[in-house]
Amino acid sequence: MTEALFTPLTVGDLTLKNRVVMAPLTRNRAKPEDDTPYDIHAEYYGQRAGAGLIITEGTQVSPEGKGYAWTPGIYSPAQVAGWKAVTDAVHAKGGLIAAQIWHVGRISHTSLQQDGAAPVAPSAIGAESKTFDGTGFVETSVPRALTLQELPRLVDDYRKAAQNALAAGFDAVEIHAANGYLIDQFLRDTSNTRTDAYGGSVENRVRLLREVVAAVAEVMGAGRVGVRLSPFSNANNVGIDSDTVATFSAAIDVLNDAGVAFLHMVEGQTGGPRDWPAGALESLRDRFTGVYMANNGYTRDTAIAAVADGKADLVAFGKLYISNPDLAERLQADAALNPLPTSGLYGGGREGYTDYPSLSGRAA
Ligand code: 8OZ
Image 1: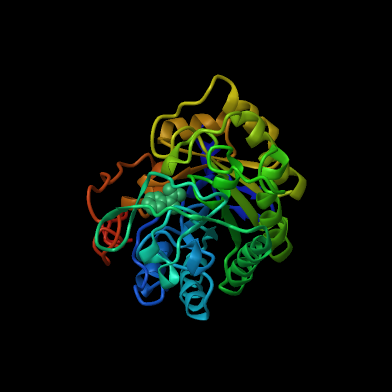
Image 2 (image 1 turned 45 degrees about the vertical axis):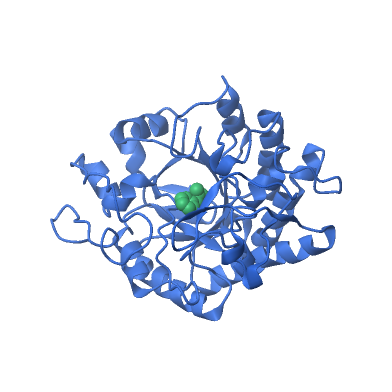
């Protein structure tokens, strides 16, 4: 049964060498002037190429999509060049890597926006959440509601991000539709009170997701697209939808209709308890017709059991990948894991980033 986690799997157009995925991890180390990845990003991701698939940290599709200091973008030529070095490093070590494309919506601050503009969101409702502006944690700014006329531009930003991901050599794209960021804000009736074609009914609230998935799939091919959802999470104080199963069933139907390769599911509260109403997660998981990637609090034992029992096709590990560059190899060997770090998570350079030892005792 142990082997279940370490056997290859075809995921859309890709063949993963094992079922261990490196989950997206925001580390706030991009070049401050232009949100470009450094050479240490290439080193960091290259060290982790033993995963069946790496999913990058969230990378903003536009300056407007930025919500934290020092997160990387994927909209400029310099950013594409920086990411090309990353994908080259991963491919040189036999790995596969997907770009997670991200727009934070209202989880931002005017100081992070061009000309100090208000962040954008489906509705002008503040999140009562915090973000990091480069000096400390600050309350997120009250957003302005996107107009109906500018939504095609927004979809286009995702399309361009996918084109850039392709140009940068990524094997796939994961659309970030989780954790209370822009697409999740559109999905839920707590953060979306629009009265036009993008709000109100469930069909309307999934419309932006449908259009973004279509645009990205047109560029990448649906077999190279995944989507991350977190239906049961109140991350970034997004608010729990009044009918989570109905809303997210419709979201999953969007993914099924488009034939995307994988659904990346945050099971329960992001980084917290694996809680959901009885049967709700299972009904969403069973509804999806593609490859199901489970995430949130998995250990070696629970991951092996989930794959062996058919409850997951892939398991994404976040925290464990921070200090264990060779996590997949360690899990397979049932080797000891490096302890989780308590500092160096967000911001800084090599320290706490590329200096964790692999099994051989050297930095990977
Ligand atoms: C931690 C810090 C900042 C952003 C997410 C992109 O939760 C994030 C994130 C996580 O999806």
